Length: 196
Image 1 (tube, rainbow, N blue to C red):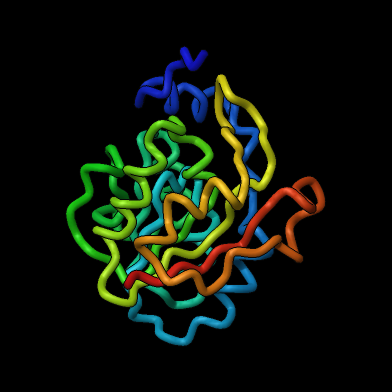
Image 2: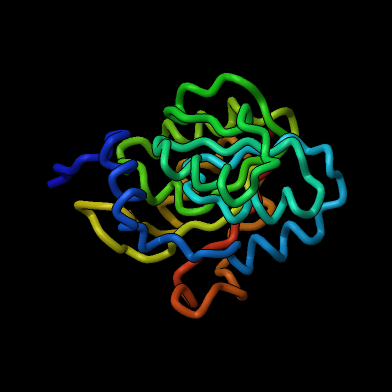
C-alpha cells in the first residue's frame, strides 16, 4: 500500500538531512557521454526533479546557458546556486513539474520518474509530450528493476514503461545501459524518445 509523504516539505527535509541516496555527487556516465556529443549550445533544456543537478552544472560548464532545473526542494536548488554562482537564478524553478507551462528542445530524465508516485506515470508521459517542442527529445535513464513499491525509488520494467511512451514518441533508443556507474550496472535503461 502506497502511504508515503512526497510533499514539497518531505523532499526538502531529505536534502536538509542529506538523506539523498540517489545523488551520485557527479553527472552520471551515460548522460555525460550523451552531453559530450551535443553540438547546439542554444538548446533549451529542462531537468525536472533535478535535485543537486550535476547534469546542469556539467552542461553549464560546457557552455550551455539555456538550462532550467525544476525541483520541489528549495534546498536542492540553493545547492546549485552555491556550486554554480553564475547559474541564472531565474532558471531554477521551485515548484511542481506538472505546473510548468513552457516548451523545451530537450528534457533530461535522471531519477525523477522513479521518484514520483507510480500512479502519475501516464500523466508524466503526457506532460513530457506537452513540454517538448516538435521533434524535441526526452533523454535519460530509467531503472529496469522492481525496487520499492511503498517509497522511492519506484522501479519497473521496459515492457511497462513502453506502454506510457509508445503512442506519444518515436522510440529512438530504449535499451539496457552499457555505461552505468558500478552500483547501477544492469539496472538502468537509456532512453531517447522523440516527440511525434
